[in-house]
Image (cartoon, rainbow, N blue to C red; front, side, top):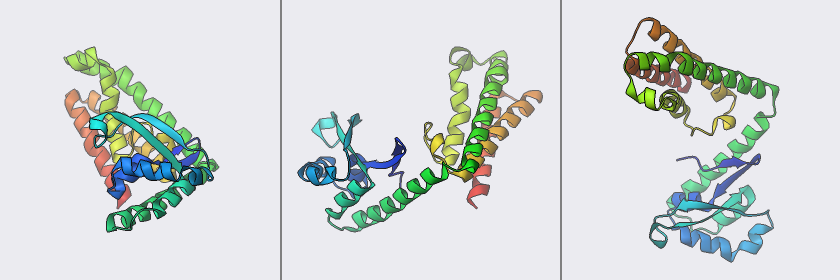
Length: 225
């Protein structure tokens, strides 16, 4: 199941769109349940909303309001849903992910996590410097029109497979546990090493990107095994 819980202002949340998608219930129906029990839900905290999220099943694809719910609010809400197999599986996973989010928030306070995060940030900067100072000029020298006109794509071509291997979006690096912060650092350093080594070998710049992706997949598989 996909990521159900996100961290906002150092607190774990889910939202009505996630609940609708994972329970198999239309989002407008979930919203009606929330609005019906709004006074009860507000006893567990303020309910914020997000806009600009497109719900295709509602209003012919127009954008709609999405409710953000904390752990207590979402726990109360899911008790109101009929226990189909889909809903029960969703409830189990939601409970698990809220627990993991709370553990991560505790972990982030430790010196070990903070040091690993600093190390990963440093290696990310080193990788980006290598992309900027070495890979992009090398690719342009070898005839790349893409990197000449859109050099920022080079960062994406290396960062995106790293994020994919970590199972995260580009803005989620602050929410990685100690194991994945360490893995991020290893991947950054591997990419830097590949860029420098393959440029010295005069490898085609397309192949450098491919070699990097293959290496990241192997590293991720080692950590998962």
